[in-house]
Length: 332
Ligand code: AQP
Image 1: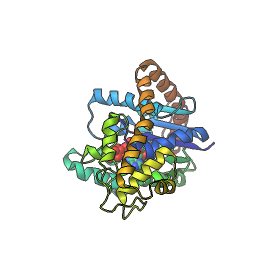
Image 2: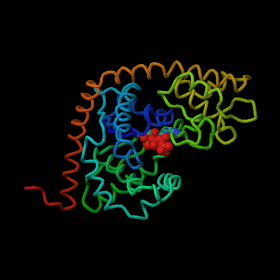
Image 3: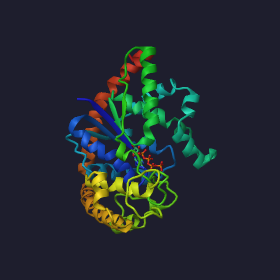
């Protein structure tokens, strides 16, 4: 069985549809065919300021939501990143292997730090991709299911794995990104040129899975499209309509061509209303299951304790071998 690893940040009270379609949906299907490791990455979350109580709460909600979305702790290893200290430990070694210029080329850092300004940008945000390298390499992952925005970080992981292996001897599996084209990038409903993101300029463009369902339905109905009237898939000429078709196709399992034929001769309003209705039905059981897990904190703790144990069983030997390869004296 090939191994997959991925993570998601507990930085808001709910995942958004981009997180779900770009990543979590693939996680759920890959747990059936792969040796799957999934984590809530709280170490990554503190690269921007977090309120401690809120972070703790959001971490629990994230885990409950992953379970609500269909992760099964019997089929995958689900854990919280800070429960496995090897992540931070391997990250230091990787920091010392990464060029400053190389890290400076990461576009996500450039975008986020430009938005935040130099004074509120932390060194942690700068080295975030290198922690991600450690996350992946610790588990000798073959594939990394992520959205398109993470491709550059997986490329960095490949470069560092190869660099380490050629300098110190074969140690790490060189992973590949796993990015299905159809949902690689979900766009903001109000600004179809921008990716759907929790730091979007307007909350109207963002669909958070745990939000009030009626409010989300309304957002679909007021999504920005274009002045044409034909429902067709064309990312360049019709980014708004294409985004709605991608979302509808992904959650319903109906191919885009089938949807386009279905809406032949109909107006944009028909697509928006039908999608809003479909989404409402689709998300209700996810919300319901998430609530069930949140109502049972003891069960959640049990899942996470078992997950951390399984994760450490893989991470600890990788870290020990890495320390040995770089020449650290083993403790007596
Ligand atoms: N719009 C998106 N389309 C497809 N995939 C997406 N992902 C995020 N946005 C989209 C994927 O979701 C996974 C988890 O990402 P994360 O925990 O790093 O969340 P994020 O990138 O911080 O989410 P945001 O909303 O994009 O945050 P900000 O606003 O801070 O930049 C990843 O696999 C990611 O690719």
